[in-house]
Image (tube, rainbow, N blue to C red; front, side):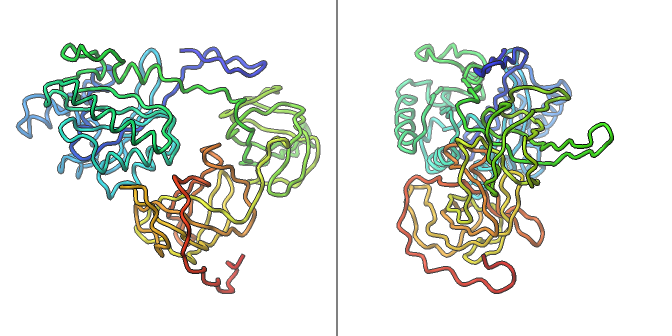
Length: 451
């Protein structure tokens, strides 16, 4: 599958599109079996891997190979028959390349789903046809909506155990679609499957002739994922300053990094943030050549017309669409560490290539994913909690709204003592704003962290 970018002067005819997708579902919904079936039936499993699965299955007393073992890589997962960690798998078909993240279904591993779905362009949410939409199904739909995953697939599994009844599938699809749409999910595709039998996973089912839609793999191969980069504002986080200072290049000064979004062209007026200084793109170097235009996610080196003080962590953006810089950040976050996040917590905030000191000034609310209600002034966020926080940074940061850019609208909070990731944040993302009854934040001690 070739791709053509709708950018003047840019044609990328040899590229094969890549789809990143995540799977999620409640315990025993057959999620790992679906992934195993997808890999097996698409001929993406090596012979020795299949032999190992067959041996392990025989050791359990199973006559047929348990395809779920293809993704349950941890010993605890194999012994308990559950998914604990996020299992990443790469496979490809003649039409597309895939990176899938098989995420856990347990409530206590919600943070793992956030990790797996944070870069996904599609989420497959499994539902057991016998149980229908349950609490964990709604939780996974809510997380997908919070993370702005563009495409959601509802895979109604174990249709063989309900007699392949169309009415069962239709009722589940209607309930889930209505709920997900209320969260703001734009595109929902419902597919009836039996992962164990292989119905509608890679090949069409002979027992569900009432269903005329695509199989799971057909949908994965054809869902549109290549967007026109010119639709997004240009964002270039500086990763490295290149100054060789050699006899051949005595005055060379370039700013290297990966374009986070949008398109950059020679001659574009640009603003450097957070300083606010302006210049013009004089040249763009890519793969040892000078080009006139570059687009996300290319890695390039920019040269500017003016000699400005620019360092790692600065953001270069077209002046006409440059974001504003601020030290006060309000965001929706998922707390991923076992240690709670509290008001007054001193952290490091990492945004693209920039890391600054920060203080948690307020935690206005915690989100109850069961009914999407806001619990005001919770005091702290525990592991797997999703809530609203207000952070004050030591230096201004140029963040976009997460709804506009998943790359430049997200950040991490890090423990300054040991470098542990504490919290994943999304600026401006929430289902509804809740009035905050939180007590005012305590004053920071005079130890260099009072901003």
